[in-house]
Length: 350
Ligand SMILES: CC(C)(COP(=O)(O)OP(=O)(O)OC[C@H]1O[C@@H](n2cnc3c(N)ncnc32)[C@H](O)[C@@H]1OP(=O)(O)O)[C@@H](O)C(=O)NCCC(=O)NCCS
Image (cartoon, rainbow, N blue to C red; front, side):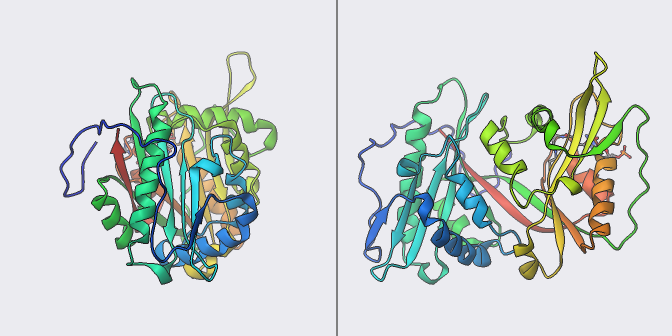
């Protein structure tokens, strides 16, 4: 893994996780810290919008997404979250630590932020220190023979976050490139392989698309099979668009159709104002081993672009690992996508 930060890679950090009753963060401007609950969803949504506008204005978190996180089997908000309030009751800081199940990699993912009006006062440092401690507690129970990573993602332009991550010992391990494509430009002709049938996403095939996703993303950096509840939460969310999402089917050994490729897309109208255009977002593109290099991804993406154009949308966006070992970046550049912003993945290996 390429190390991009100026800090030295000190290898896995082996130190005992803090005890479960370790004191939480303390800061003179925070009158009260407490775990979040689903009944905070409205306040958290307003808060994440304010943070999002400052740090990642083109992709805002939906209220539904916040609420659904509280239903995930691997998120225990009473232990895995903290929110901080100023004396006047303003929600000033929020930190969550999610440890989704993994097979070959144990991950604890840090999510959170400080309200833009309260930055530069050391609140984020306190919160991040607590999150790192909580992540170490979560990972302490994982099989030590499996790599254990603490992970945090941030936009490259969110300089306070990147500086703080580095200061607390995290290293920038990977860049993720955002790309966009105008839909009024020529969409390349589609050369559908003869042994492939293409259909729109249908919920009847959800479980087998999930399997295809897990199989094709085995090569993807920091990726692990998605839990059933995280998968269902994605494909049943309001922003998920089955009508803009496509599946490639091949005949399986017993004649039953097998999902060998997919492009799954969302539309979040909340993003349009800051983006300055109407758009769709391609969340997942994958083709399973044995079916790659046959232009299946190109075909499915092309169908998405046509459908989004027919819907009257102006642009399509997506995000790709800039070092994708399977050539995803070249695929998108070849389809007329152009690079826009970058986000960074910071890690600590335990
Ligand atoms: C990336 C992925 C979706 C490509 O699927 P695919 O069906 O093999 O892609 P296509 O056959 O349609 O490729 C179209 C173009 O992409 C480029 N491309 C595809 N694989 C490539 C590779 N390994 N290296 C370089 N370029 C590649 C080529 O330009 C190709 O055009 P060409 O045949 O004229 O050279 C597939 O490899 C995959 O599932 N990877 C793992 C999951 C993943 O990373 N998804 C993307 C997340 S953002």
